Each structure stands twice: as C-alpha cells, then as structure tokens.
Image 1 (cartoon, helix red, strand yellow):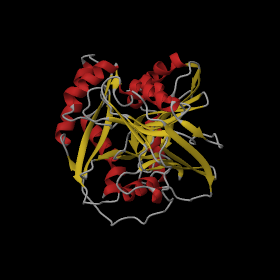
Image 2 (cartoon, one colour; image 1 turned 30 degrees about the vertical axis):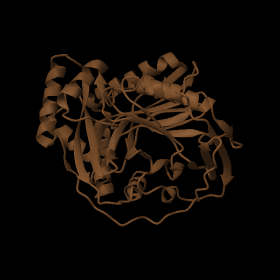
Image 3 (cartoon, helix red, strand yellow; image 1 turned 90 degrees about the vertical axis):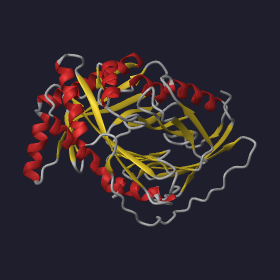
Image 4 (cartoon, helix red, strand yellow; image 1 turned 45 degrees about the vertical axis):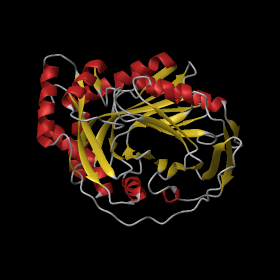
Length: 410
C-alpha cells in the first residue's frame, strides 16, 4: 500500500474529567479503564484487512503509515502521538472486516495528565473539532433474544464437544452462543458504554467500529520493551452473601476442571510469546479475580521483548489463545466452525490500540456486542469445554457472561 501521509500534533490540556461525553454518539472510539484511557473523535484514516494474514498485514501497513507521518509530540508518553484503534475478526474466514482507525482527534487521560492529539492528511487543514462534552441522547431499552444458537442448540453443542474430547480429538474447545436485538433509530451508544464503564470499572471498556464491551482479559500490553498479559480461564458465579462468595472463590481455586481449562490457556500464551521474549515469567499459581458478577481464575505474565516486535506482531502470534479457541488450536477451530451456526465476527478477537512506536494495549473482545450502522445488535458469550464439562453448567455460565451487555442495553 502507499500510505497516506499524516501530520500529527500532541499537546497537553487541562483535565477534562470524563472521556465518554466527548465521543460521537453513533461512532464512538474508546479505550478506558477506571476513567483513564483514550477517546477518539472522527476518522483521519481507516485501514481494513481480512483473511488469515489480517494481523500481519495490519502490522506491515501500520509501519508504512508511521514511516510517512510527521509527528510532533513533546510529551512522548504512552498514548500520545500517532495511534490507531483496532478490532480484528476472530476467524481467518470471517466475513467481518478487521480495522485500524486513526481518529482526527484523540484525547488521553492518565494519572492526572490530559492531552489532545490532532491528526490530518499532510497538506490539508488541521481539524478544529472542539472538545465539547455532549449530553446523552434519549434513553432506550432493548431486549436481546436468542440468535442463531438458542439454549437447546448450545447444550447440544456442548455435549458434542465433550464427546469429541472424550474421543481424544482435542483437549479443550471454547463454544459460544449469540443474542440479537435492534436499537431504535439515532440511539446514542454512549449510554450503553457508560453503563459498562460504571458497572465494570476494572475491565477495559472499549468501542471500536461498532464493537462495544468491557473485557476483563488483557491479551497483551507492550510498553518500551516490557510485555504484560493476563490470562483468564475458569469461571464461577459470585455468592449471594460474603460467606457464599468466599466459598465460591475457594471452589473455583480448587476445581480440577477449571484448573485444567486454565492451564491450557496459560500454556498457549507462553508458547506464543517465548520466541519474542528474552525473559518471560508467570505468577506461580492461578489467583482469583473478582468481578461484579463472576469470579475468574487468572495468571499474569511478564516479559521483555527481544526481537523488536510491535504489539500488532504479538497479537498476530498469540491469536487465538486457548482461552477463546481451545487446544490443539487447529482441531478446536475446526470444531467451532462445525458446531457454531454463525460467524463470530470480532467477538473473542483482539481489540485495542497501537502507537507509532508499536507499543499498545490489546484485550480479548469479550462481554461485547457488535452494533451495525442500521442498529442491529449481536452479543456473544462462550465457555471453555473440557472433559468434565456439563451442558447445563456451561449454559448457566453463558447467562452470567451475557449479563454486562444485556444490562447495558436493557
């Protein structure tokens, strides 16, 4: 490709307090946790990719965009200067495009410092978009109902997955189901995003090209050669009181089924990252992470890059992890395509941002819904299936995982 030349200027600004009110109500761009992160307005450049090489193609295209850009960035900190928001399809053969979007205006907020980056085609006029907080649009409430795979179909799929694992066709497969609905015309997506951000402040709340959600799982963070990831696999519902909640966390931590599922996910990430790192360490044993409605088993990974890879290179190497596909990966993907009667789109794919230096933060697109320009909404939730899985338990787990999005739109 011949990348369009961009001019980029970053400057500090006073604290703007809230990012979400700055967003476009129908095309929001957001990456935020605990009211810190990045908000994008407008589109200076949009790059689309598809097929098995979509992430590698994106990494190559981004290098060319950066090489052709003129960047003025006196702050030179994470999240300043030229960057793109991205979301990638889960499957190599998905009909859904994968995108990198460079906004016209980016507002960043971290640790009490705020900045604005303005981006425009070199030779044209710099955008003068005001940083104005806009009031939310009319309230709406929609019901999300079973889509292509209802409850009975999902439990049948889980039973078949367990049967295949019993035949030793594979060790684990992640199976998902979908819910669908439709938004009223002119609906303000910032309302749903605000509910997600308030309800799940410790998750990454994101909005990129109509994909909105709050993910608890950091796929990869790259910052000046340091690499961090958090693997989540293994889930149980929160207890109804303090004693029951503690009992639930203990049950998850000591569950053989969940422990096996988690270990498959950790090993897949380690295998993907080792060729790119000189040092790679993990927490010794999984720990429990508490969300408003769930406990998860988690393992943190930290390492040091040794080969100059960008965050885009790493998501290409890592995706799909066993946490969202299964293991062995080829067998798991084949079974997903066989048992799921829908295209996952960007669900369970990487979502996040990349900077000019290749640093960036990427989550796995979980607890999410894809909203089309015509207002169609499709939400997804899935579970890791291993030999000890039971269809009824996995169905109940998907209901828990749907809760953030169902409540955000309902």
